[in-house]
Length: 358
Image (cartoon, rainbow, N blue to C red; front, side, top):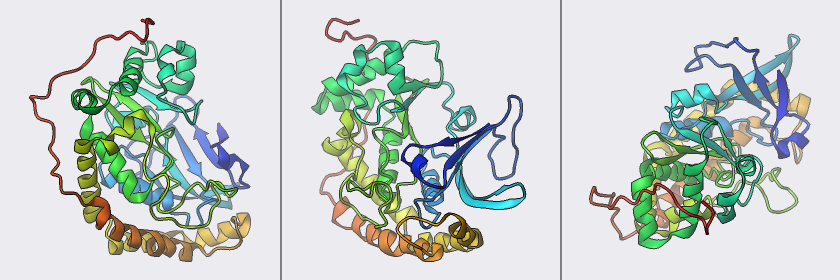
């Protein structure tokens, strides 16, 4: 089964596609960590370089985030060239098993509500209404009490009490790492959607992200351009995911210091412009023949664009200034990060009442 996928990209002439094999069939290849039975082929029609999703997935994986695999592929139809696409691993059972997530309760956030997730009134929704906003992907037969408790607490606590609860109930290193890695490459299309909440077998809450096309300087424009803004941006609006959970990692002094230090470490270790430029040149050379053919077939937005020049523009217009910015005043602070000690009180909850609703 092959279907069109995506949201705003459905309006593009070259569509994103999802492939689902018949039950009992799997595809094996040395490129895959294990056999797959479904995958996505993203068109990259709105990315003039064709490379951002591959670069972002590779960076996030190197940073230790739970990143889906991505790499360029040529799609043929009836033996003829169809287009240059990006293979994107789907966050399905194979993906969850690879990252050890199948033993936890996993929710896709935002499939029915792009904005307003983790809202206070979500805790009193019916199960059907709640799962329309938070699609439960494992242990569907269990109730949603852990999710309701989490939403209630992140909306009702603040300051030292919220920090203590986070230390006791959240996989802090993984969340800090996910946010920091996203900030380095400016993966901005998450926080209201494009991520999963993971309630793991240890009783801790973590996250897993996906959909990295708006990264490395690409941004959804608030003007009429939307996702077809040809400019490359550094910093500015949408620097961070919002909401009552993620914003705590920016405004709490201890958590914010952890975040700044992780941003700096990832920048120093994985984001040197020369190293990124070498990988960009390698991918650009690999994909150029098909990229040129793709542009001849499908074109692109805002007029012609040479794929190799656009790939190099990622480095010159985004990576180099972002590298200097992140190692400059952005990550400087006089405070020293202090990781939580065992003495932090355990403020786990067993059950809560939401204004009289059990």
